[in-house]
Amino acid sequence: MKYLPEMTTKTLQSRRSHGEGISTTEVHSSPKNYIQMLDFRDNCYNVNDFQILAKRYLPKELYEYLASGTDDAQTLNENRAAFQRWFLRPRVLRPVGNLSTRTTLFSHTVTMPVFVSPAGVHALCHEGGECATARACAKAGILFGLSQHSTRSIEDVRRSTIATHPNAIQFYQAYILKDRSQTLRLVRRAIHEGYQGIILTVDSVRFGYREPDARNGFNALPPPHRLVNYDEPDADNDDTPTTTTNNNNPTLDQTYNSQEKKAWDQNSEQMFEQNVTWNDVTWLKSALPTNMPLVIKGIMTAEDAVLAMEAGADGIMVSNHGGRQLDGCLATIDALPEIAYAVRGHVPIWLDSGVRRGTDVLKALALGASAVGIGKPLFFALSVGGEESVSFMLELLRTEIEAAMAICGMERITDITPNLVTRHPSLFSQPTPTLSNLRSCL
Image (cartoon, rainbow, N blue to C red; front, side, top):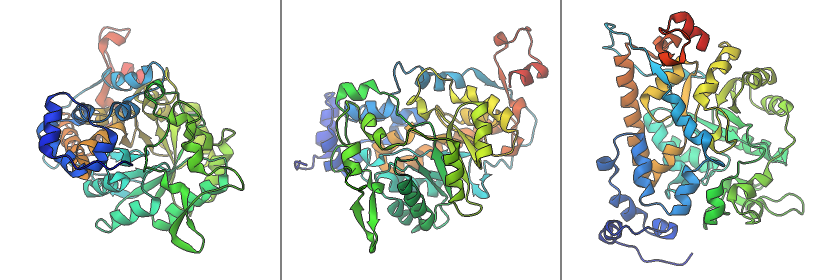
């Protein structure tokens, strides 16, 4: 990378005032001054504000990679719009003086029913990468999901977190690779480091085609970034990474950075096994220690939720990949009711895609979720202030959840039931909705 001298905060502010952009190289060459310029506390008052602020400074190709959906972005937009078609039914004159957002996820106590969904390449937004995000989650007392496609290793993320937060709750997310033995090696590394659960993503035998990436020429990770988990520890020295090879095939970094396709995700998807079945869920579950939970991510139908449980899943994650996979499918909040009905409480249900407000959290919980995940927003929070900014965003969300619970008369998470939500009366065949109407729409 060509060296660029550090720019002063004054220079960066001047460029901002003149509407000039800042390149990816410049962001990483002067991260401290860059972060100082972006005073998120003066500009961010809700989760959406972090994206607004980040858009002003991130390079166009990086911002659009993070923010875009697939094809016409119908599902991306629907993820937000669908939450606004569900309405809350607040109850009054109920004691809420001892309100608590605490709940339990697989025997782990968390401070609120929110987690950070596994998503890769955090270091594109901040030099701390996944280590910074994981520490912010541990500080907030919530679960962090580490992506197989992280830019900081399984080992580094865990060790950097427990150094200051020994009780951090972290799950590792896996894909089924063409080399299944490598999938298993990665999972075993996570188990060895103390990750408490595994999330298996099942909606990504192919990645959705993201036109903005092709238009912008975003077809490889910019140097020096790598998907470092594929640099596996040497057999003779666990601390010495080596680039993964498979017989005489190209190294994996040459695969995901091949630039053969116009969009990066179409290059990285070439590592994934396309002939997967529910037997792969059973296989992975059998490889885990007893009582280690396996959550299946990417479920969007009742039928697949049942099949996942039959295959050995301990949890279901309703997710459409934040609108980045199949365009034209339902928003997750609208897919949730049929899945909750099919699961019938046998395993916990998590949900991500489109969550931005504390009221979104209440709606999802009322419709059957145990917890909700945040994905895209964490990238924008990282971009404008690193670990500290992520912590600030999580606190804003917690404040919104507490306020919404209090106004709805809910003192505990367990008080949230299906009676808390309804559709707009205009959606009912009868002019006035009744509880029977409500149950029928759930």
